[in-house]
Amino acid sequence: MSLESGHHQVVVYGAQSTFQSPGQFFRDLWRDIRDSRKLATMLAIRDLKAQYRQSIFGVLWLLIPPIAWTVGLTVLRQNDLATIGDFTTNVAKNPAYILISMALWQMFVEALRGPMSAFSSNRGILTKVCFPREALIVAHLVKMSVTIGIQFLLIAVACIVYQLPVTWTAAFLPVAIFLLAMLGTVAGLFLAPVGLLYKDIANAMQYIVMAGMIVTPVIFTMPDPSNDGWWALVVRWNPATPMLVTARELATGQALTLLPEFFLVSVLTMVFSVAGFALLRASMPIVIERWSA
Image (cartoon, rainbow, N blue to C red; front, side, top):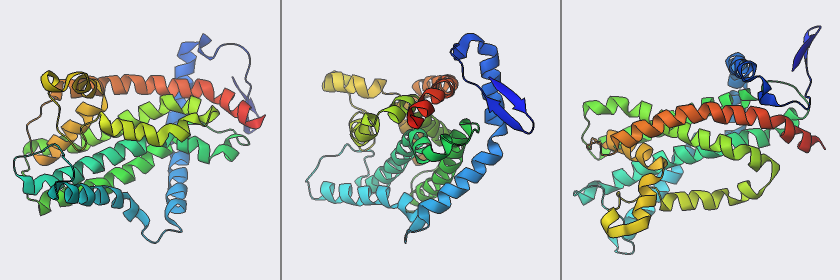
């Protein structure tokens, strides 16, 4: 609970359940999210400056990974060293599809890692200063908007250079990209409480990302369940699949093949975002107590 003492707010943590008064809990949660916008913006600007202060390439590091993947996969394919699922019957345009897919996947991965990284990098402040913890997640979303803007520019350049068809549905691409990033953030919110207490999650994150690429059609087309068996079913039931595929189809002017699944996952993402914020808010006193011990 919170008590006002002069100009300072004193927060007292007791043994009673956080969810004993759900209405008050969610009102406090919404209030802290709403009131943390200014602080979140300041934290985001600080982090962005620190991230690229000692870097020669700066924000170009957001573009280098998808471009490097595209060059590498294209070379492997052209020399028959790897078989990559066709995105289009026009093989000459496949590099554009790979580039767009890798840019979208990088956004998702950055969003997935964001919540745990935001709290880990501010561990010293969290154990000494009382402020709305949700500000760190809002700051993460502000930084994600910068990432999305830069990656969106890369996607636009790829569409122009490779002369990909642009239809009226491309107007919904920013919404699809935002929902893809939100899906990654929500997944990160659920991983963060355990990951902040135990390093296993952080150590396993690179393997989680690698496994994710195997079951998400980033560099391959949707598999056929009749031919590919259980693997095709895992790919289809992967919540990241309809989000990434739909965003790619919007960017490249293709027919939307997973629209019902996209809407379903979008609704679930918004619902679980509330649950994710609630879980993180309820678990942070325990995490900070462990950190301070």
